[in-house]
Length: 185
Image 1 (cartoon, rainbow, N blue to C red):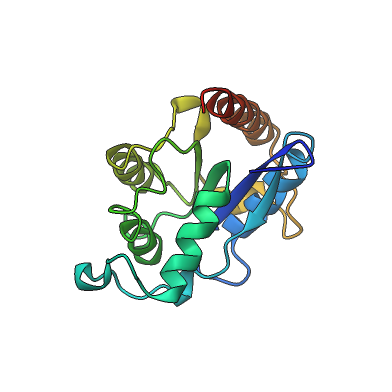
Image 2: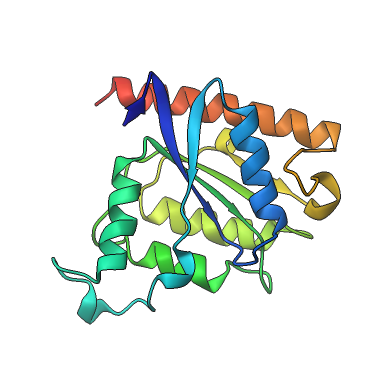
């Protein structure tokens, strides 16, 4: 879906903290990408019930219908997440599990930013999941930001020059991917 010529991106923070570095990175990306696409934040991660295949029917819980609709309406999905215990945060993985049978991520452009102390193992695990569910993700739309808290301010400004350059590259690649995806529909 395009809004006044701009692509619409749904951002999902894998952190449930109210003042997380990941939310600051989403704010930074939203500001930096303003000329390319608009970003709206999915705010219902904590409301998603534990995945239960018995409830994954044509009539799932309302919160799941809403989540799936927001994913469907977006031209792309931005995930910005920490790494927890060398893996994917449980609430984020749970939300993604609710989309496996309904395939909202299938062929959908995805940008993944893992912003954490290290992030490498959690990033690799989430990439595996995103590839299995057929999301469109490339190395150019995937970024690990280690020591993340030291590279972004509380008001959503990236303070590290190398990180800022990498984020600009990710935004550009993600924008191109969404445009190409739209052209192929």
